[in-house]
Image (tube, rainbow, N blue to C red):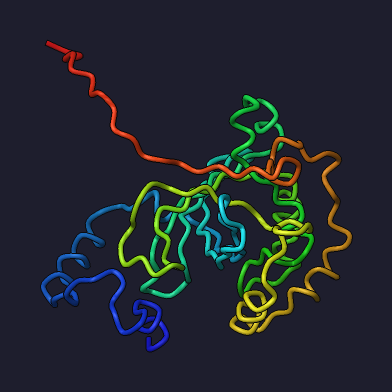
Length: 242
């Protein structure tokens, strides 16, 4: 509980700002939880911990926690948090598709996606507290997938609230700016009592994808990132219905 409280504060300030929840609010929430199905939330059946890099500034790297729902064999959706504590902040969303679906996307869309093969083969992507032999089939499937991850709350820079437009995130890669800061890896590994290096050695036999589309991880070939800016625009003033 102390760790969770500490995670919700930075520099002595609460993130996000606000008053502690009242007993009445806790009771209302418990009552709603008992009466409502919360079906989408209950479909989250995996916790994945990995790292992500900001597309426009890959020196900024963060540990991420993905709570995963699989909608079918070719599509997954993830609520992304900055930790797995009870006070974790929801910082974004990632969509994951199979190579088959990825190849059907327009080229300009593919440029926004990243591959997962290195992330898995290197031992950076883990399912905390789940034995490797249990998740091995899922890792083999994920190694052939692509993801699109939008960060909506940059808690790593101290934002107390979600500020500005979403930011596109990239996956770790075995080249120059794509390498994850070793200190981040050590901190994560110590938390879960694991060794990314040992996981890497144990995943040698996970098959490499036959081909990774070069439009994914676009920065690797072109040195170009993508960034969303906000601009004012004229509103549509035609009423769509009587």
